Amino acid sequence: MTTMSQAAAETFRFDRRAWTRLLVLCTAVLFEGMSLSSINVQLADIRRDLALRPDQLQLVAGAFLITYAGLLLVGGKCADQWGGRRLFLAGVAVFGAGSLGAALAQGAVPLIAARAAQGVGAAVTAPAAVSLIVAGFPAGAARNRALGVFSAMGAVGFSLGVICGGLLTQGLGWREAFLLYVPLALLVLVTGARVLEPGGGGSTPRRTMPYLPALLITGGLTAVVYAVGRVGTGSPTQITVVAGAGLAAILVFLAMQRRARPALLPLSLMADRRMAAACVALGGAFAGITGAMFLVATDLQDRQGYSALAAGLVFLPQGIAVGVLSAPAARLANRRPVARLLPAGLAVITVGQLLYTTARQDGYVTHLLPATLLVGAGIAVAYPAAVMLASGAASPQDQGTASGALVTCQQAGGALGVAVVTGIQNTTSGTFWSGPYSLWGCFAFAAVALLGCTALLLARGSGAAATGEGTAALDAGIPQ
Image 1: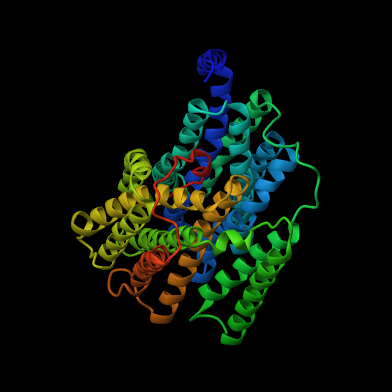
Image 2 (image 1 turned 180 degrees about the vertical axis):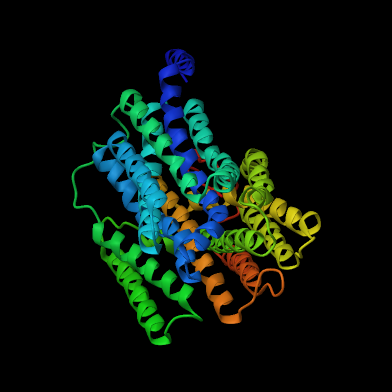
């Protein structure tokens, strides 16, 4: 670095305006992360108040994840074409409107639609925020530090979500837990409109946006998740038709991506064993993690008499473990082969999921606490390893696409996991404590992620033995 550039970097370090802009961006990803976890402690009250069926309840939990997963990739392209500032503010506005709609919802359909709107807002806010950080901070330590702070807000938001969501649900009600995000969104909008500068996109040549592929993948995921959640309670014919339509939409999406230039999701990238291993790892792991949180939180309140706050505190150690161990794990991933660290992290998650299946009414200290700690520690190790593995599979111009694909698989896996455990419960009439059939399904997801990822990494030519290279820009997802 030249003397002039060093001086510029030193001057930038004390640029309060830049760090004020970062605070605005981090506030948005903070409350979006809170929404991912707080819903789990709201569900029991929502079900009682609105008399929801199990398949409707799982869509309340999964609608956010589905739209987030389906629209994240197109959100990144919109940021490139329209500009990060404009898209960021629009995404925050949509998220706030969805939160208000959820608070006012009087039935299953409006509540599910509002949760879907929250996911739409998050899907465009996250890539727009990353583009603004990249545009607003000089390359090097300042940008990496800013991206690191931004990424850490996911873990902070998770921990705050279960506490604030539990406090508000217990003290005031589940509607007030949704209303919390409305003033936060307004604060970000007002402040962001004043301090955020145009940048982070907007210079890309105007092209037709891939709206049809985004609608196909989002609609396909929605149909499959709905059908799976209806197993055991719905008409077999209806379930088959809806699931078939969803799978057909996903296949059409894949066929379009094979011919599209440029593709929303390049299949050549997904065919790389490193990328495939990372996607299998996060998709399977978060299917089990999200499914277990859904089951445990609702059962603790419905059958064990836990308050919403107490149920939320059960999962606090998981968020703390992620927050405390993420930085050391990321440094370790820069020094050790990620092909070893990723299966190791998945193995820890799998053991944690196994402990969930053995929990009993008096088993918090002996089973639930260690389960949440192990799952959190496993996420802290596996997540940066998966990010770095995906980064190694992508060319420089495809880094953003690789990041979006990885987070898409993570969120889609979470939605599918909730649907599958709901279907298992419907079919077996099992409960968490007396017959944890559904929690064995969560364990199976984690085990499949471990075995599938390991098999892909052991395959010849995977090229996955290298250490990570600290690609901070790729690590801008919201790990739970």
